[in-house]
Image (cartoon, rainbow over all chains, first blue to last red; front, side, top):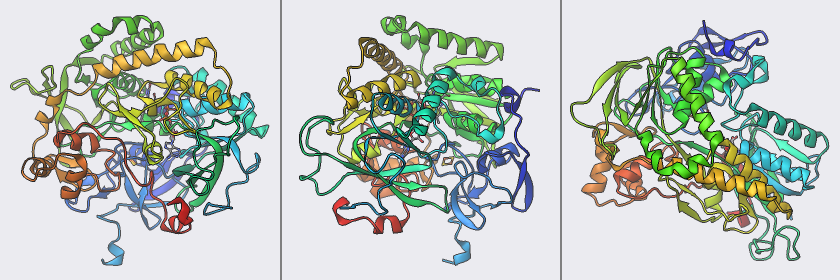
Length: 103
Length: 492
Ligand SMILES: Cc1cc2nc3c(=O)[nH]c(=O)nc-3n(C[C@H](O)[C@H](O)[C@H](O)COP(=O)(O)OP(=O)(O)OC[C@H]3O[C@@H](n4cnc5c(N)ncnc54)[C@H](O)[C@@H]3O)c2cc1C
Ligand code: FES
């Protein structure tokens, strides 16, 4: 079956793992967090502040800020730019991602 | 006097460089290697971690792609320039600074003593120096960095133009260029059955790549009529290479059974947690949806985009003049040697008007010759003129028709960041008298969020009845407050 990887003849170095809301996901070295999530069929990883609507990556190049996510406890990271590092813990970002501050 | 927050970088090249290039896409990369060949000491800064920009975006080395060229046209043009970059880098002629997002370019020292003077590098006169302030590295470890240069080339490229429609915020609705970017760098797809829609030649490339990578692409939905090219025969005939490229896309689409529906648009995306189907309707000449022509097409992703918008904030921050371009966007005013209206600042590629990677490379080379004071050669000058004429023809053909707002229902979100619906913007324009995007922004918060109007800007301007205005953003990326606090007063 055709796939992006077969198209470019990719034979990546060993995959590693990150977690998304506790679920383990395989990540290829060099992939952004957004790419890892898309690769696992996950398209939404935050909700908006006003309407609580689901959002994920949109522009893919760092300009729209729709892909904001919480990485290792730090909210508002652009998933399309941040590389996935082994063992990263990625969690859905609700609203401003600052619920812990109770403001 | 050191005028930057951190000491200006003292890379291998040593302190001051002759030319700082912002952006390592086709334009900036070609400019940097040409300038280095012509004897200049160059710093090349890019926000991304690999050279190539949007066109030559490619998998990270860890993905072990044996054939990165499978996702590209003209990979060789990139490969030779990247090899030249690495050679100049080891020889100390180019300092390549990946992961450096430049957020401001300012004259070094108080303007008037060492500020812009009108002299060109190499000419006698008071020295003009510029400081480029950047955020370096990945969050959360980013640091302040600065580069000092005698001349600056702005080659910051473009981002996609989006015309909103109901449902465009659903997960699975993604930028067409965005899907392409994610595919090229991460080898992933947003879905299995991906409709491609919007306007412009990029859609054909995107559909071709998605299909080649295993997605089913039921159709490319193009709002313009390709017959708009008919009036442009001279520009087309002078660009046989471009015709061959277009035929190549056509062939690829036919092979993958992709239909091309011209003068049609996606007027709504349906779904609850993600897109499940879209409504596609026929358009009249002005892009107004024709009643009774709507039909539903199931899909699990939609890749959408309506051409590109030049990314100008660094240039407009410096006061560079802009002009309206044939596609309805705003581009920089440049002279025959790629100079902006501000002496000491050059620009090349999409910032001077959307025109594609080949044009960007030609312009980068022209700019480098100009900065170095070397004659560019008649062939290069002719090549640029020819490609620019083609780009203008194409831009005019895909310029959005005024009727597109006809599919923008009042409840449709326009500003994705602040969640402002079309109705509120119409109210600001019709009832409260807002005549421009700035007033709409103050009344509704549209364009005030994280992306600073990059996504909703063209739509808000259209709803306010205004021609699109040039980028005006105080900072081109989020800058940690401590970096700003460290800035000396002279540069504010
Ligand atoms: C998302 C997207 C996908 C595209 N895909 C295709 C395609 O598949 N096929 C095609 O023919 N054309 C494509 N294009 C168009 C293509 O990008 C251009 O034709 C070509 O790349 C223009 O070259 P450039 O050098 O002017 O700009 P770009 O290639 O856009 O390069 C600009 C560079 O500047 C950097 N930059 C921007 N701002 C800053 C800053 N402030 N500080 C530091 N660095 C900065 C960026 O990281 C980027 O590397 C795409 C465009 C976009 C926006
Ligand atoms: S997808 Fe737009 S910023 Fe990440």
